[in-house]
Image 1 (cartoon, helix red, strand yellow):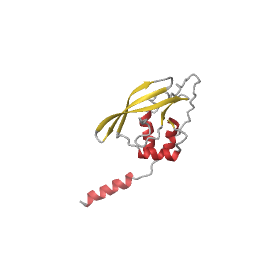
Image 2 (cartoon, rainbow, N blue to C red):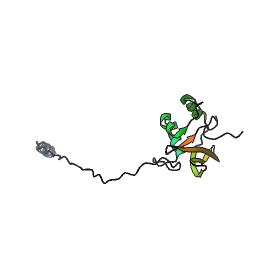
Image 3 (cartoon, helix red, strand yellow):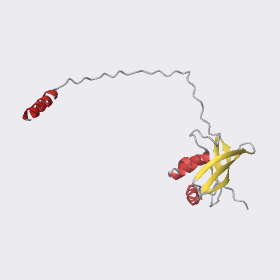
Image 4 (spheres, one colour):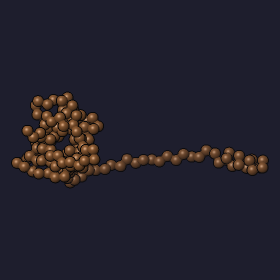
Length: 156
């Protein structure tokens, strides 16, 4: 038995010898960018499909949920009577659905559109209509001073 321990110890000691460390020389590669590559311009005009891959409503809601209201501001048409703090309070008090899905876009006059948004609130499916406008080639939602949902126009 002692012989086996001795052989194992001898094997370990002999295998732990110094080995030459091989260094790999990395060559710098120069990549030339051709001027013939054309980049497709990004279009923010379509409220159903933004360049981020979602519709405008989901994108604004996602920015709100992570606390990045500043990033959502360029996609909102806010009346002068509502400042940033009041907007944050409106969004916080809003009755957002758990699932929001834009199902249709109705184009009205010139650059005004109406989004049909399917919502699910407490396992009840509903339909809300959000209004928006194209301003400077960017789709924007109109904000109303509605405490229930700031994007739905209250009927009087």
